[in-house]
Image (cartoon, rainbow, N blue to C red):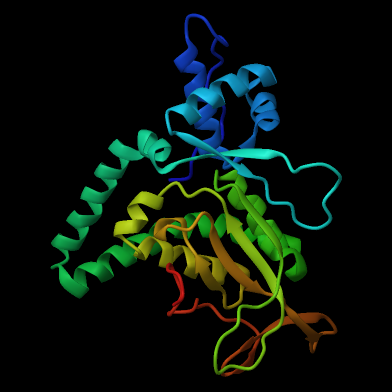
Length: 277
């Protein structure tokens, strides 16, 4: 299920309940992805000094780690702000009980279906069904935005569901033996609520990639996933190629290895849900 983006109930900044506030800081990073101290202070209605104190304590316990903030486009003067991200131990503190229940449920589905390839197929079918309602909501947002803004619209919808997603311009990934493809955008998810389960059941990543392809109306390529040890889930979305339609409007088309087509509903079978070799 998507991580909740609603802030926890207010708690005192110090004294009687330091761990309550510390948990709020960690939970906010979990829900929104890597965050600066200023972002956390604003989000939780705390002073920057209080947030930094709790971040120092979380870092000392190995639950968060500082990183240099990525800046896309022109960078202003001065050093970039430092962001704080949860470590694997930090995620485990939130996910351990949920992960065990979810993993047990998916194993049960596989076993009831007969195990082996049949069991894997049953888990994949569950994963696709899980994303179906979510994808339909995203489809409405994406279609309203227009073809040239579709990746950014999807990123905003994913962020509202707790995935801390962004979209930025990027060249097409190189594929040996294929002609050059157009540039596009990289859809990045800085947080994944089911990363630990997806390590054991890659069908979740594959179903999500298929859903993105269907929502965006184009072939997409999964380049990296948090579930496989990458810092960010990254999906390449090719730029739409517009040509005059028969009704006097522009129709998006995409370049595929088999030619040009108006819509492609399937993601790359070789890269969906895993890192390409």
